[in-house]
Every structure is written in structure tokens, then in C-alpha cells.
Image 1 (cartoon, rainbow, N blue to C red):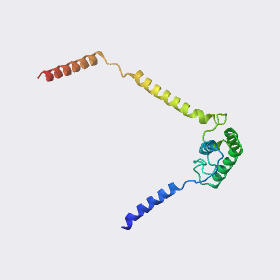
Image 2: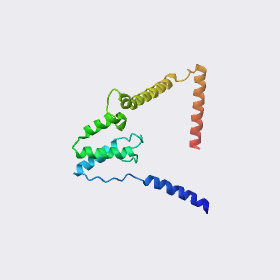
Image 3: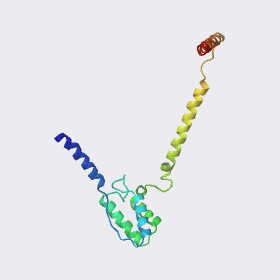
Image 4: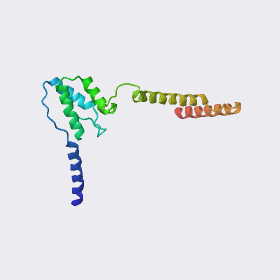
Length: 162
């Protein structure tokens, strides 16, 4: 019976860990500001967690950034001003979608370049296969091949009619 309890306890712990969400309540002066807060907190990366946005992170710095975001929104800062401030303070890394610049050009172009390279490899492989075509048959080999094909067709016709 104890062997059955262990997996159940482990499963319960896993679910408990996934349920621990960030719960903060800010009183926004308008629903538009609250929506902007949700959008911006979803697109800004937590500097500590690195794989979570500040909306989902429980790290203290994420909590501070959410509070700062709320204050800046209530003070009338635009989305661009808030993003610029965060990038100036934490670097381009803080954005899940970095701006298109010389420093981030490889991030933006890498998927297209990899896709193009893959397409070129496929074309080259297919052309190589089509160009090979196999060795040429001698006259004797062609005659023998024709005999085999004719014999197979004759046997097939005979089977159909019987």
C-alpha cells in the first residue's frame, strides 16, 4: 500500500508546483492601462529566470519590474518609453522580441537563412539523384531486359484469362 502512496504524493507535488502562480492586484485607473500592463508584462523577460516573462515569474526582481511597470503606466509613459527604459537598464535581452538592429540581425535572419540552406541542400540532393540516372545498358542487356518484360507481360495476361 505504501508503494501506491509515493507516486500519488509525487504527482500532487508536481501539480502544487504548477499552480503557484503570481497573484498581484493593482488598481488601474482604466481598463486600457490594465490591458497594456498585461501585454507588456507578457513580453518582458525576467532578468533572473531568463525563460519566463515578468508576468509569470516569482523572482523578486520580476515583482519589482511589475511594480515599476504599473507605476510607469499610471504616470502616463507610452509602451515604447517603457520598453526603451527596460532595454536601457537590462539590455536587449529583456525583450522576448528584440528590435531589429545590427546587434540582433542574426536573431531575425537565422530562421530564414537556415530554411534557405535546407532548401538548397534538398535541391542539390535531388539534382544529384536525377543527374546520375544509373549506368547505360549495353545492347545485350537491353535485349535481355526486353525479353524479361515481354515474358512477364505474357504470363500476367495468361493469368488474367485463365
